[in-house]
Length: 264
Length: 264
Image (cartoon, rainbow over all chains, first blue to last red):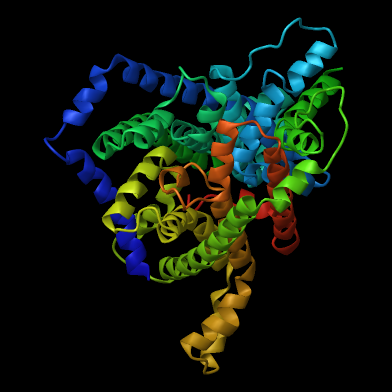
């Protein structure tokens, strides 16, 4: 059983690399980069994913921090994060469609309050995609940071406060640097998952601003050109990991420094 | 003043995550199917439509069976893998472990294309067997983590004691090890179930005209028409997820989500 698992694991990687080598080598890639619209999609994918990662960090860190410091029923707060996380991506994206759509909750609320004259355009553009992606992936960030914050030695913070550092300074010089490994892990996860997301950009994005993942999906669906799809998938993987590997190296250094500090 | 501001921001942040699922649940009850702000008349007609439509019920049954099978397989394989990794030192142990965890971070769209190729190679493309195989590989990381964590917490003295009292290795596994890691097994199973049951991003690549799953069907339905029956189905799925989270909370506690990263 283990062997089969192992073989399948390797199998899909092999198939993937093979399918690009399919035919005369790098032709598929050449064709990809010759098309200006594909390059634009590629750049948009990177931008949207980076933006989603940044927003996730801004939203996710305070949530994780608040949960780790909460003295009351922590389980309730955890539930608020975990339940939406486990609800299907399709369902959650549909939720945003209902909220942000032209006839949706937010527009009808604003209209009935007389704040706007016509419906605002909040989906079928990049804003919608980023909101959706952040919502889908921010729990990964929260959980990564929380894992670090919950197991952080509180004595370090107390020591800092005893040495007359204010709460802000304690946070900046003690808590934040110590939680960096979690931040980096979380950011990597959000970025990687955002680049490969299909459901959210498909439902919340406009026709003209697809991402690489949706482009792959549409190409597979419409013209069944497997080598082309595979080469695009490889481009996607390279794009995703080329930004993540430096981060991973950074994380190692940070982790090493942090544990060094912890010993002192 | 400052405290109040912090509080308001925190409440806003914590509403962000549950917001779309709450809105979906409310909108499923309206007669019009969109949650517009002067709330219109309430009705359960969309639930009636869902529960009397044979096609939807058929897909619901398929997705449920698929998820149970996948969860059973995945939990078993993950248990074996975790036992091997925890007990034996062998060359390539690290590689083996990363291979299990890899699907978690691999951009999903690329994974979908890879599976499409793999299933074609195995001659099982467009079958439920193929989808199940893909789901087992995707869910494996979710099963592996909690099982390994509970194995690590296990006191080896217990197993040694039982062995010195003359128990065979199989007896030790069945009467000592398995009962003691039960929380890990339960959370692994529930996790795999929910991930498989909700998966759409990768499954869209693997369906065939008469082979489909519930989330994928919902996804295509949303694109085709805005029928509010979706809101009813979505609410049903949300209720299912909430009950699973409750089950997790009652049986193993939610702290497992913030378990520290492996061996730093």
